[in-house]
Amino acid sequence: MQGYCVKCHTKREIRNTRSITMKNGKPATQGVCPVCSTKMFRIGKS
Image 1 (cartoon, rainbow, N blue to C red):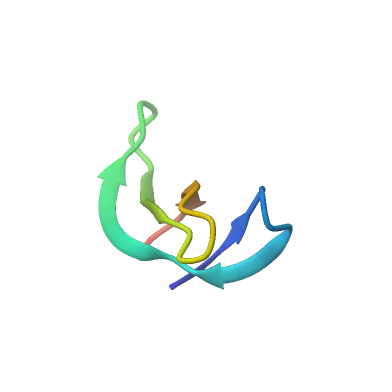
Image 2: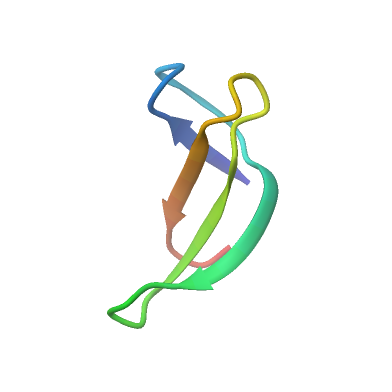
């Protein structure tokens, strides 16, 4: 799954992905950027 890395300013594949549920009940995916190791986040089903 791809997400936007805020630090690199590009779309990259999310590494170490895990599905989470936000406080409002919507699904999201959280992981790490493979280049700079910044936390990445994508809202929506994985």
